[in-house]
Image (cartoon, rainbow, N blue to C red; front, side, top):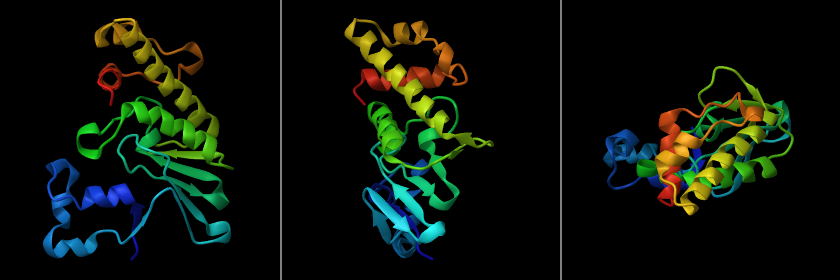
Length: 192
């Protein structure tokens, strides 16, 4: 069996030390043989023809190894934790080198760089979505980052920005859960 991962994911899995949540200790000693042997940097295609699967990496987000998977013949994209649901992401800054600031730019790059997709399989949602949902998610998330940057520049606190934020009417099917909103804004303020 050949397991393919982004090169940053392979590095995370083979770290010398890690927090228990990352489970890198499972790949020590004799179990190192289970580490992925095939990695990619920016893009890789597996198989060919209608069965082709394209793997993309556009930058940091949830972690520093988030892979976008396109099933070309099915015109379908699996987004993993980069678009887990119609709500704010969990940003694994502490254990996975994720980034609130780069998450938004990664979404923009994915929208601009992935062609010919109609169906989205989100990372943690029971229902499939459509391409426009990803486009709108990028707008939703980047709007929060912009609001956080503007608030910080104006001397507001994280609490001020969070308390003053409301989801724009045209994006009302996206949820800005208070805890996740607080985390995203805090990470933006911290430059992460």
